[in-house]
Image 1 (cartoon, rainbow, N blue to C red):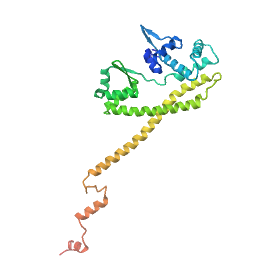
Image 2 (cartoon, helix red, strand yellow; image 1 turned 60 degrees about the horizontal axis):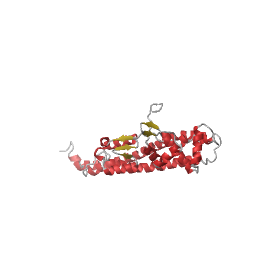
Image 3 (cartoon, one colour; image 1 turned 135 degrees about the vertical axis):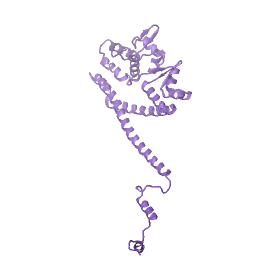
Image 4 (cartoon, helix red, strand yellow; image 1 turned 180 degrees about the vertical axis):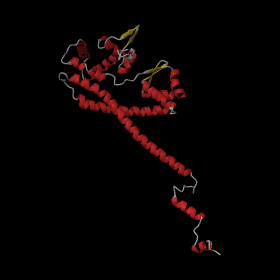
Length: 293
């Protein structure tokens, strides 16, 4: 746990390698080159933290920019010793801002019976395959790890309301595609207008960029949340109007012919009244009057 009492996610070596997108042997090679700090030991098990994952992502980014492993080793050593080497210590100070996790999601480990408690008979081979394909779950032996407590709770609530899990997963696949597109849009905006072009950073610029990125994290979430709320409001209003119109049309279609209310059709009401009590001629009215003899 950290100073606030919240649990920080930890990884075994295989899990860390998978999260970083590298082979396990590469991770161990980085350890041997002292590119990674030592893991926490619990008996014979080595536990790695989010800081290790951020470091691996930073190494990957530096390799993509043409740095050699030897040069990266020197840069990291200079940064960890608090020395400046052509501004490298400050550049590597961007590690947390550039490569740190943007998500606060908490993974959930589930035994088969716990998964059944959430989704009951919807736990089928087809649905498990779909969840694996989307990336919602991963399988470790007999246990399943769901990527997000919030997504798990939302899926469970939808199933409890009568939505089939297959429909939830189909919608989740589409949502994933749309949010990936949104993430691409935001990263392009940041790359073009905040990070461009980094090149040789003047003194203090890396620190300014790190602060900017920290401020941008909640802004991206707030924009998506606000736009989603407004879009739902627009769409729900349209759906309600359509539903009310369909209900009115069904009611009219089910009503027998000729039973329209007088308030709805004044002309028809007047015509019906004439049929019951037709108007009399003046002669007829005189013969039937009080003076008729």
